[in-house]
Image (cartoon, rainbow, N blue to C red; front, top):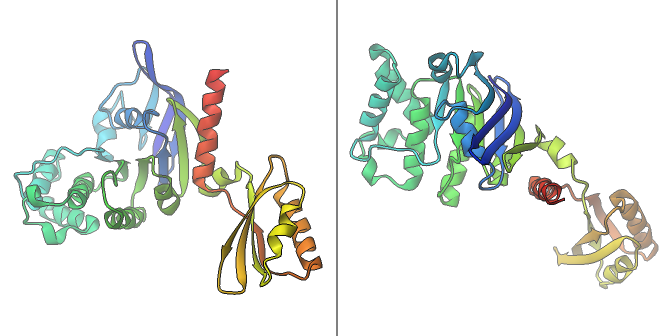
Length: 318
């Protein structure tokens, strides 16, 4: 659905996007993430045809964005980070106008507007002036705008920016449900949003692509530096045993239902979590301390992201 080859965008001496290549297949929900200023929004604006590339090639649904812009844009529903809504219009009126501008046939516009409102869950606000809508509902109107022409591809730039936690959860649920019938490229710097919504992620930093893959594949790039145990330790003897183990930097304990306690071991660099866990269990059992659970802690996407961007910084500094 999206094919990007060697995409570059510079503004004189400032290079915003540097030789980026990636693809998004039909039916995928893909997170496009990076820190602020990484080049995410610039890349998206080139994908939707708002900006021209300095070099490289973009194909949307098989159409080259430079050679066949109308055909490529017809396949895209774009939700910018700050959607320019007409606040003096009612929701239904605004979406009808947008359907007309997007060349939805006259006889299909009413149904198209109704479908977009249903998918974005704003039917109850259809006759409300947008001036009176909350930030969360305005975001959903912008999403309905992206949907009104029923494009196969949705490109969403920071769709939960500025929302409260309840609004964020609702928008995430909407996006997840849209993935059943649309390909989605979701740009964000909020990593839990990607973990809860996306099948795959692309990481960009300082204009360069630094990683891509499934969420599990990205997590696997960073070995866990902690292991967790749940112990039966009524005499509080486990910490003394675990602190003495080679490769353990720090021991943190947190009480559960008495007499159970959760223990997290922070490991030194280069130490095998499995080896430490094996030795820890052997020592605890030898001291007659009950072990209920024991496992390496899975690295989070946030851990991987921090490692990738730090590595990039170190590479540029050297």
